Structure formats: structure tokens, C-alpha cells
Amino acid sequence: MLNVLYVLITAAAWLGLQRSVDLGNFLFGAFLGLVLLGCVGFVRGEGTGFGKTLRYIQAAAVVSFWFIFEIIYANIQQLKIIFAPKIDVSPMWIRYPSELESPRLRAILGMMISMTPGTITCSAQYSDRVLIIHVISADDEQETVDRIRDVLEKPLRRIEQI
Image (cartoon, rainbow, N blue to C red):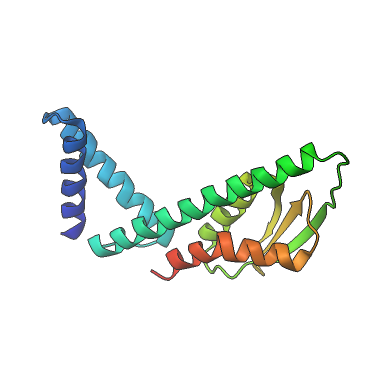
């Protein structure tokens, strides 16, 4: 019942955003609600209620905020490397032990790491939850692991706990 209510609220919100009440916009809004509900269920692997859906949306917004922040920070770090008079990089391979239980969220974490400038996830060992990451410039392996854990993985763990 709550899922139907969520779809209807999403459809009504879509109609409000479009400032037009017609059948096509209502059906598209309902379809959008179903897609969002399905995405939330996909991440968790189960059906969801309206309250859970709102918590997922809030947690996803936090993940998005921190990810955008990390992309901006990494771009600034890459610009410092590029515009330095002498390019001083210290590339390294890092074994990152993930604390995420869900294979889907570990895949999302690997994707987020790969999309961050200066890093790429090269391998994922799902049996022991280890990601193999190449970093273009890192002074300390543990510092890099801690930064990934605090900035990227911590908000994803919040989604996992919902």
C-alpha cells in the first residue's frame, strides 16, 4: 500500500513540477516513481516502504554530496601536480579492504573510486572484500585508505544500515 502511495506522490510531484495536469505527465510521473522505487529495492535486494524510501533518498543525497566534494578535491590535487614546475608523482597500488557487506554497494564504491581523478579500481576480490586500486600520487598508503574509507565508504555504509 505504501508503495502505491509513494508512486502517487511522485506522480503528483511530477505534475507540480511540469505545471500541467494531463494524463501523459501523470503516467510519466507514476513511471518515474516506479523506477525510483525499483532502484531503491535493487540496492537493498528487497521491497521497501515509504519511510525506508525517504531514508534511502536522504542517504543517496549525502553520498552524492560527498562524492561531488571528493571529485572537486581530487581535481584540485591533479591540477597541483600538472602545474608544478617539476612533476613529482609517486604512483602506487593499494589493497583496499572494504567494510561493505553488499556486493552491489562494493561495486558502487569501486565505480566511485574509478570516477575520482587520479584513482582507478583495477580489481575486485569479492570473496575477501578487497579492491585493488591504482593511485597516481600518494605519499602514504594508510592515509589514502583512511580517506577513501571516511569520504566514500562511510556514506555508503549508512545506506547499507537502513
